[in-house]
Image 1 (tube, rainbow, N blue to C red):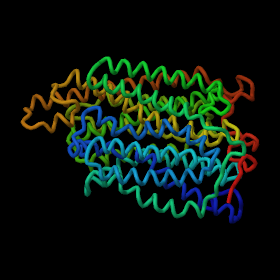
Image 2 (tube, rainbow, N blue to C red):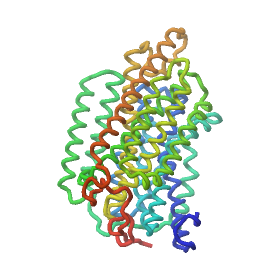
Image 3 (cartoon, rainbow, N blue to C red):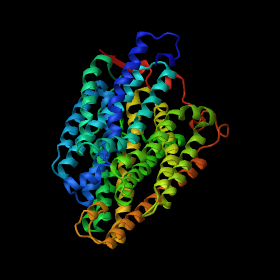
Image 4 (cartoon, rainbow, N blue to C red):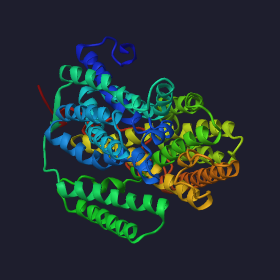
Length: 520
């Protein structure tokens, strides 16, 4: 890789930086991959553990909610108390959670294990990106390293279902978690040697109440959504929804009065930053929901094996990864405004193609949907991280990186919680009323052909509803980008909306050595 950097020869510092990048990418790949690795495995998990409809959704997205709820907090903790230390603790927790998940004997145990994995994942992502900012002091090399980081993160989401399919073809469902252990062990051995401890020069107190308000508020709202989809409106769901909204409102108001807020709300005054963060959120809402629902569609409606379903995912995954890698070069040519608009246009068209899937046909529409939408997903995964890191002072690199990754992780979980619950609601209202999910229904013995067809038809209706809503949301955000982001040269040149590339002034570039205190 040394022939790609800007200097004619590679110094020991350069080699150490690229080796450090390689070490950090292992956990990054695992954290993103485990957000999607269960999509194709859920039919087997359902057969083995018999979760209820809402437990099945919690198995899928408790991981993303824990990661997303705590990323901001751990970004701040890493800034103030040491990022390498946090990386090592997070890797240990992630390994313990992975082992427990693989050995789970009940739905409740698997949910708890996935939550522990999420706790470890929340420590790894923001500190990993901030450590890279310290390793790469040259702005151009740093931008390249961040692009590789973002591409790896996107690749993990994309290959998770494929890897799960390959493993399930030969092993039991718990194997999708045990593969994490070798990577964790290698990281624990290599990180203390290659990486250095880094912390902010002006540490401040982490507000524990803000952490609790954000996590509990988010979980209360999602609990209400899931139970409405599975069982309808009840007093418990109404109370949970109101409580969650109150807690999240309290959290937002509290941030304005803190000297060291978990989320710096002033960042959202910059419209490019705001649209980019919304892009990161919505792209994962759409991607996770469509990936989960189409995985079930391929296996339970079209009756493909898990391995064949995994192979059908490959074209979309390849396009997504390629798009993420080439996006920085494209942005340099066409600018952030055009890139963000194109991102949502591709996603909207791709998601709307799912409306052409049916009971006996649709695999070609699924592949076309994944390929077209994959272009947009790749742009989002690459552009959101670059925008967030470039927009903040160096001492806020960890928390800003956490905000970018939070938009992805919360979006990943919200996609299943919101659009997955929408699909479950449509299935419950249109289906044969035999069980809460299609997979559970198909496992009921003695069903006649008419009931099976009704169940499959109801699931396809739910898939279409989720695809339609996601596609319209992407189209709406494309219009918002057109309206909010001025064309270059239309406004003050210092407006961030008019900057098509990241700033190179070291005073504003995350990761400059003056903003860090390395500790050996």
